[in-house]
Image (cartoon, rainbow over all chains, first blue to last red; front, side, top):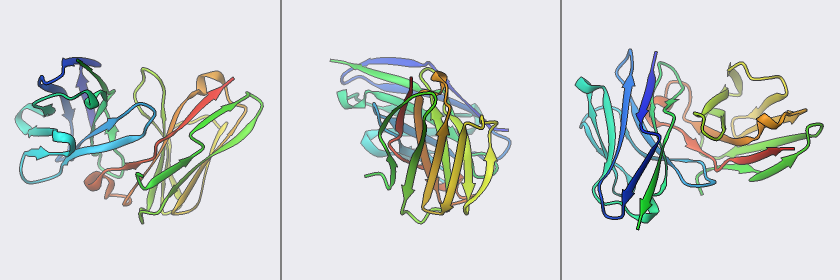
Length: 112
Length: 116
C-alpha cells in the first residue's frame, strides 16, 4: 500500500524567505512521486515529478524537490518565496496501478 | 488552458434538483477520474474510468452517477443531493492504466457545487 504524509497543514513564510514543504511516503514498490499546486478556485497543476534517475528534481516556478530513499521523503523547496506562491500544495505517490494517492495538502501563505 | 475543461464552473442546486457536471479532454488520454475536494479534507477519489469502462467506484452514494460515453468525455449526474455534498468536484485525466504513475494527472479547474 502507498500513503503520503504532509507535515504541517499550513506554512507561513516571508517574501524572499525559503519555502520548505515536507512530504513523507510509504510505498511497497519503487515510488513515483509528484508535487501539485492548487491556486484558489482552480484545479491542481503539476509542479514536478520524480520517476527514475536524478534524485534532485527541478520543476516550474523555481521549485525543486529531492527524493531521499533512506528517509522516504520528497520535500519541496524554493529558495525565495514570492507572493504568487501563495497556494495549496499536494504531494502524491504512485500506486501499483493507475491511481495517485494524495497527501492532505499544505497551505502556503506569503507575508509581505 | 489545462487541457481538461470542466463545466459549469459554479453550480447551485436544490436538494430535489437533477444536474450534470461535464468534463472534456482532448489530450488523447485513456483514463479519467472524478475527485471530490471538501474544505479541510483530503482529496477523495470517487470514480475511475479506463478506456470508457468504470474500473473503480469508491463507495460513492448512488445519488452520484458517472457516465463516460467516450474517452474524451466524462459526466457526473447528480440527483437528490445533500448539503454535505457541497464541494469542489475535480475531473482529471491520464495516459491510461499503468501510466498515470509515470506521467501523473492533468486536472480540470473544477466545478464548485453548492447544495441548498
